[in-house]
Amino acid sequence: MKKKITPVKLLINIVKWAFLLAIMAFTVYPVIYAALGSVKSNFELTLGGGGVLPDKWMFSNYVTAFKANNFGRYTINSLILSAMVTALALITASMAGYVFARREFPGKRIILMTYTSMMFISLGSVTLFPLYSLLKAIGLTKNLFGMALIMTGGQIASVFLIMGFVRSIPRELDEAAYIDGCSLFKVYYMIILPTIRPILAVVLLFSFRMSWNDYITPLVMSIGTENLRTLTVAVVELKYSMQAAAEWHIMLAGASIALIPILIVYLFTHKQFIAGLTAGAVKG
Image (cartoon, rainbow, N blue to C red):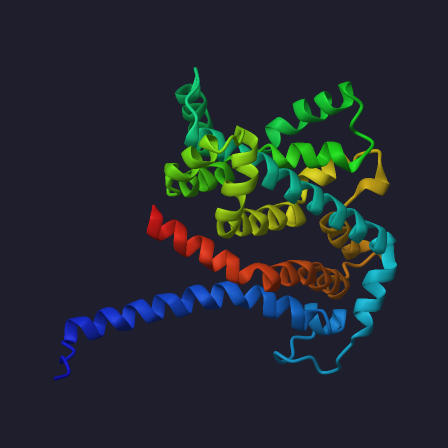
């Protein structure tokens, strides 16, 4: 016997699906707008109005965007920076999450409370000058590694994700490894890391996305060192790269190019990403 859908349940379902469709529309619309705007002329995009599809498909905008303003060099900088931030985040977050979940040591609660409080306090650009001064004092303002260190330090949410996942792993696995003569690091490397691969995929995707899309930090840290600028900085500069007038079509072409690496990373990690989120939700 099929259950009858009451008017109240029907109304709830309608509201739920309307809400989900609205969220999807607000999420997808900017991407579609950027993709279609990138193959329009600047006149059609800003002044001419027109339909959703371009009157003339101008794929030459992509060639112009990539050739303009040293775009290729900035793309390489973004790839190197994002790779370093992602690697550092995976190493530091997994180690910290493992230690916080498995070990007891003096000051642990104070450190966790401090980390938790900092998750809800956003200092934003206020911290950029002290961080830049610190990098200058130790001689790391002229390379991408110093920038990667700064961008890695603000990912405390990744530590808590991994810590919660590690707590769901039976301690008996650690104890059995210790009985067999494994050290703390060997347990981390041989048992914990293979077990937490789903949540590591989540951290990888979040870290890569954050470092790839960050604009203000690379802009400030590359002041006076133009060859360290990243793709997000280059995309904004494309707006005025060729003429005095704002060239939105070229900037949107650059932004569309900048989306490609994120999509590639997601395609290779989406199964582990979904598995990590699902496991985290089930295991608490």
